[in-house]
Image: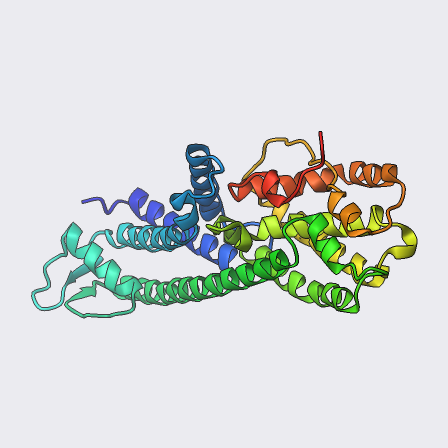
Length: 341
């Protein structure tokens, strides 16, 4: 039988690994998941990106988030179960309640399963006080793992809906950064409704940014359609705010009270999401956003060199934004119109 001291230690190590991973993933509001989850999710997603590139129609990438989340929970349960199985393989640990005969390896697996699931069938029992106490620990820890896993699943799916709803709202503002700015122009200034939309955005942006910090797995939920892609939405909105701050003539700009908070919250998202981005390779910063839509709308523009200088000063930030877009399996060209070559 495998119930040696080494086997029991290995089982205890697996149990502790899963507990640490579950607690780090579900309860720690940090910038990463637990060690087991982080490695599994990151490597699997990078492999999928390599296989499918940035094809918008990739069904596997679109469905990967739900599959990865479900697989993560399954890994927790299986490894946790296996750990307690190894622990209970100790000599004399488990026996049949009616006959008293020692349990087989398969019987112990069955016993470990109904212990960690808190079912408590009763046809097999622990063989002594130590094993009875360990059974209680297994049941309690199993309850913790299952409860946290289910709660995590529901919380992540709710956050996915929030992300896509916000992305839809941002994309509805315009088909590109320039289009967002142009639509807000009322002929002699930016409309009050447009400014009010900017004032309303930071609260919603902040909620989604904090959700990403709490649930890094959200980056693997890729939307099938660009109109519900959050990385594209944040990149497009950030470029629009850059145009308002650096391309529009100072006298025509909306108040900084409306623009600056949006950029600060986007910066929060870029810093938190960028630290967990699956795209680690260096990328070139994207070019400054195009101003053609502003010119066509008759918006007064400032010094063109000022926009270039501002974009160059934010190269590091814009590189992180581009990595997030690529990590969603998309190209920066999808952010919107590109400047002329």
